[in-house]
Figure 1 (cartoon, rainbow, N blue to C red):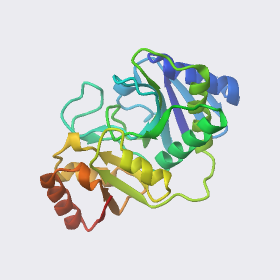
Figure 2 (figure 1 turned 60 degrees about the horizontal axis):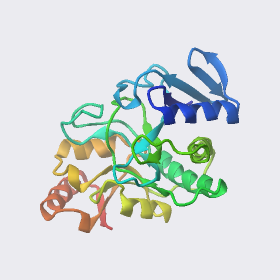
Figure 3 (figure 1 turned 90 degrees about the horizontal axis):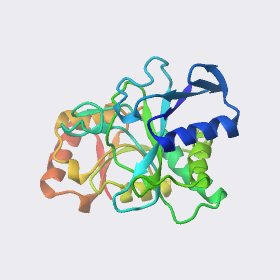
Figure 4 (figure 1 turned 135 degrees about the vertical axis):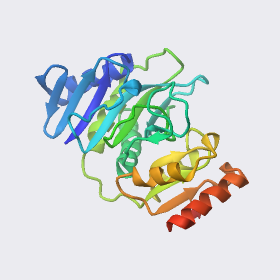
Amino acid sequence: MKLVVASKADPVSTAIGRMLIENYEFKPIGKDLHQKGEVLLKFIEEKHIYANGLGEDLSPDLMIIVSSHRSEAGVKALLAHPVGNWGLDVSMGGLPRTLSPTSAAALYKALHSLQECASNLGVDGWKIGLEVTHHGPATDVPTIFMEAGGPPDEIPEARVLEVIASACMRMLKPFTRVPPAATGFGGGHYAPRFTRLALNKEYSFGHMCPKYAMPVGRELIVQAFQKTLEAPRIAVLDWKGLRGKDRELIISVLEDLGIEWVKA
């Protein structure tokens, strides 16, 4: 069973949830809970990033949280990303130095579904990509975020939100092939190198750790692999997007763990 979560504290999230009900025939089965086949849609009162333990009562195989995206630079984007904190700061939810489980296959399918649905709906001029692992909630459920947005406090038009709603449903259908799962290290917040590799169908990415979050210790590196459903046995290093000392630390841990690594 799959679970889609919409937060009433996020107007964009709420609007996407309502679109799913109206356009995809989700039927009510309880308070703030709807269902279509093997997919549940749940509305929650609190902001999703602060809802630690979210989804654990329903034990889904995968949780997709639909959300707004904020860009101080005003970049309009349709994005997917895993969840967790590489550091001690929990101002955006979650727990310190704790990653939530994720799925590389789900993120890959989400990325390609966003691209396909944006094209089908004639949504142009929007950046489509992955983001690195960041913010809450902390949960034991394999989780991804799917987001739409740009300038703070600006709600995208309905056609853009429909891209997220339709991509949610598209990604839950079978894909002919998903490339090998990998964990990414280095680069910026919008993971341009990992996005390109995923769009080129070379790798599917689970957790991704950016340059700004480093250095990270062995425990977090291990978490990044263990908390990806596909248990990746390869790491992709954004070589120019890593400081030399961080590369050395990561490679040392990877080789000790017997995990293959490649430059990108």
